[in-house]
Amino acid sequence: MTAALVERLASNDLWELFQRVVPPAPERPQGGGHRRRADREVLAAIIFVATSGCTWNQLPPGFGLSGVTAFRRFTVWTEARVWAKLHRLVLDELGAQGGLDWSRCAIDSVSVRALKGQLTGPNPTDHGKSGSKIHLLVDRSGLPLSIGISAANLPDSQALIPLVRGIPPIRSRRGPRHRRPGKLHGDKGYDYRHLRRWLASRGIRHRLARRGIESSKRLGRHRWVVERTMSWLAGCRRLHRRYERKPEHFLAFAAIAATLICHRRLAN
Image 1 (cartoon, rainbow, N blue to C red):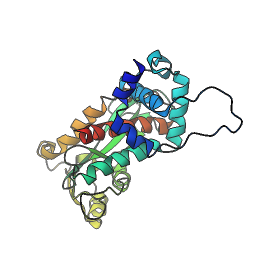
Image 2: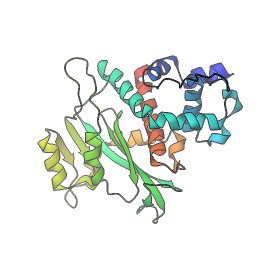
Image 3: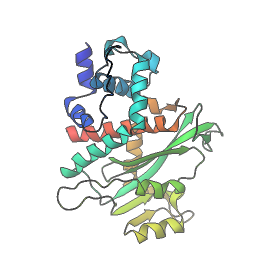
Image 4: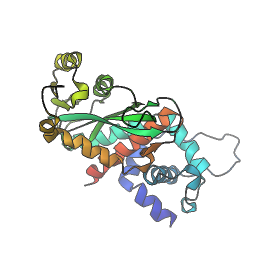
């Protein structure tokens, strides 16, 4: 059961990519101690927690390791920025195959309730209850290129520049690496003159809905892809509500979800 479960959650292709970014296991010069659990088993357990939404203590015994072990390894890998590196590596593979469309990108955010921790704030769309935001920038087909988190009361406009700057230089089928969208679509939350100037100064055409002038429905013809990607993120049930006290742990789960979305396209 364990081998089949591990192979289903951490497929051979994903495991090969993960091996390129995971830090080496610490050495024990004096020997002794318990046998270290294999990284692939722990990776599968972490993916299970991310997708099922269970707590670490609810990890099924079929994985052959405890929730404490999985959480400890998750913490170490998060500090080593493994999840961001894995997401970028999957994007690199997609870019090399011509699987990314930079001609038209879209940006948006979604709020989730948060029980505790930093980067939380009163959600203006949820009766002021504490929450966090997931900010997302996707390519034309909805593949996540850049992801970030903030308190729920942070205006979307303040996340645009960090998200665009956060796009890593990604390989292309031919020519130099790519990191700038040809055009960026956003709703009225991004309707600010300084953002338009900033995008234009970097050669990025913008299509941001103007408050009080135009309807959001017309812009939705192109922006719906990012809303669909938000629903894909909901497949990672750990993101339905934020339980993590540390924001970097919540961001790690968001990066895992983005990686799985991109990897599914790569596998196809």
